[in-house]
Image (cartoon, rainbow, N blue to C red):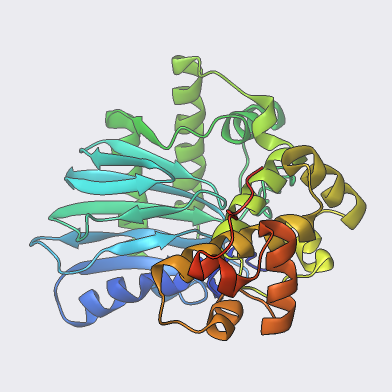
Length: 340
């Protein structure tokens, strides 16, 4: 399966495996026990190249005492399932906070930022599976690995339920708990060569997830897998990541869309072109800095907000606000940032 590059950035950093550093440090310091099979920079023994294609990480940790670390906001390359077997655990996804209890299952997609701990991780045993199914944005097609042998119609149904529903936390049952325990035993027993039991148990896990969805009769929303929603999520990221040297081509590529289609959705959503929206975000941030940091030079404000020069910043600022940055800071002109 071809691996797509991670595309989510914030302040120049990608949301992915660097958030696992606290886990690695805790294991190295003997603060907790971890058993996992992994690829890349995820913690655990490295998976053989041809084994379990698409699996980024699968395993568990045992924390028998409170930890002094947590996993900050991050995203993963694929769909992530975590299961709390014992203890309790603070878990946040997007704008919602949860306190996980035993038998809680979380499901997050690559575009859903989430964190673990509040701020630290407590006592408990947590299982996880991160599976790359070839997508990064809601509208992109899912490509399941060949070792997943669900019937074609079942796999299609599971895909729809995972794409058109984004509930992050689910109550499960003893069957799911026993399945994760079997996965954990297979991970512990494996030395990198015997890959027979593990794919069997992972297939069972997805069957159980599908059965859980069917029993709940979950509401589905087709718009959650649309190209428009991909652009909406990206534009929300841009508001926090305005200082990046974005070009129109870069923006469209990050969304996995052609430039014409990307511009079309951007105009639908914001009534502006992508570059106009970017300028608006930068000017709004600059307005805050000019007011909140009176000792910060106008040039530094310009660079911090992604403008290439103070002269260009002054021109764009005047277009949006109606006066120069210095006049705005001094309050000599009756101008306020325009809002759309």
